[in-house]
Image (spheres, rainbow, N blue to C red):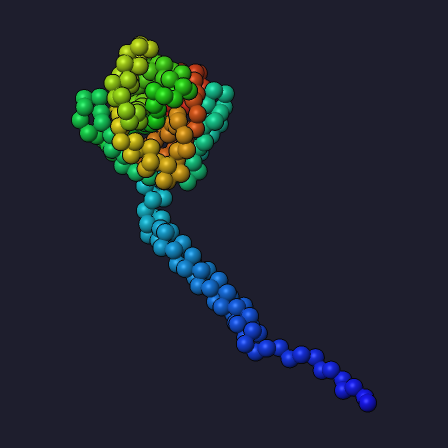
Length: 228
């Protein structure tokens, strides 16, 4: 008796069909994700008119950053100048008189904005040099604005400044730390201390993460040149 050849088993349509549908489904999901990402990207981008308005507003800061580039070395070598300055948020905080104020109150001035806290050792170390910089070069055209962001034991910042003999700097404070969070969201700050050089139009000229000797000849030359 001859045996009949065994034909290959046919695929079970109940199991093969779902597998065959997975690829086009995944491809469709990928396309939808790509489209959604592109839409969100376009929504987040400033339109041409907004971009042109920002560029026009910050043009003086852009020119200033380019002019200051040769002066960034030595004790302030870590200062990162911004070739395309953007307006900073109108940060709100408490002034030395205890009243609320904001960054826009300093429009028209060159401002060295410094974020610090009493628990930040490098902040404490650089504070005397910021005080000396304000004493040497502070004027109606330039001001150091150090904002303390301690959220507890709010008596400590003033006690610390008194202890180290700070005489020229005012005590600006934000016990909510909203200033830190606002700048963190825009990528301007990741830790303390952070110092931002702000032009008269409220646009960032440059920023530095970490401490510096702000009473150094290099810092004095930079600020003097920026005021001209």
